[in-house]
Image (cartoon, rainbow, N blue to C red):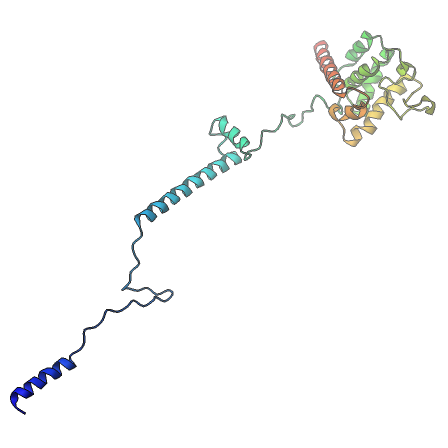
Length: 260
């Protein structure tokens, strides 16, 4: 083999045995929890960034609104804000409406009958005298029975005034010694529906006993709970009855306080 032939063969072998150019690798799918340096995650789009920022702001605003309403509902803001905050809390149902006015501790409401007398014996006599009541000679009994049964005698006078004008209206209230037309406690069964007693001291005590047993001892201590039973709407104008009684009570208490 000539030198030229040998050189030509060497060149051909060199070309054949030379390494081929490497092809670009295909990115293999990433395994769970494994990151790939060759295929980094594409950058977030600007539009997505704006949307996430808007959602964060909305969450902050919503949180602030809920917190403010919660403060109003618990009353923490009430002392530091105008009254409109309290009204807003009530309107949304988060803050309870202010409770109705109640008597101060130790104070008895004006409609409660279970109490010591709020008028004097002299006032009782003045009320009975004005209508020429047959009970007038027993004004002291009205007062002392009120103390004994712990029922304010001003309510006895008011109810008797409504029922029989203090037993002066010419009805059987005078003969039965029952000015309040009570039922079921009469000593004589021949009296019928309405109770009757033989004397005024017994009739006066009978009314106070009736109110104690049938109402006060059963938890009915206000005229607003007593009179719908004592004078039911089926037989009376109960609201008018209540207004009449409370008006008389207020008048006689004021008169008694002024007279002393």
